[in-house]
Image 1: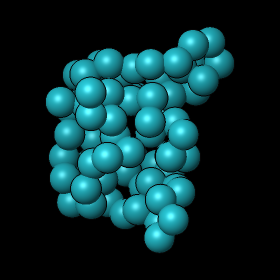
Image 2 (image 1 turned 90 degrees about the vertical axis):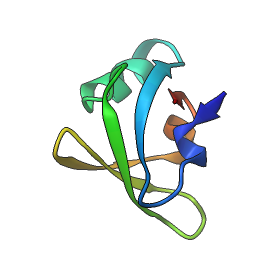
Image 3 (image 1 turned 180 degrees about the vertical axis):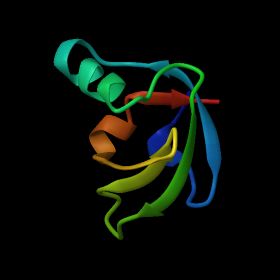
Image 4 (image 1 turned 90 degrees about the horizontal axis):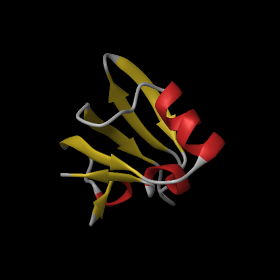
Length: 73
């Protein structure tokens, strides 16, 4: 299982599945991150937190703990 946290800068990945429950999963979905959507990794901070991505033409920052819940292809 590969997660968004392991993706490289400049890579475009497709969401395979969201893990987590309740408010955490809802927060990720509220950002527009759902199964089948493409995510472009723009920048990763030196310590890996946050991860800056582009989803559906929106620029977002994700915590690495949240990125670890997003399974990618």
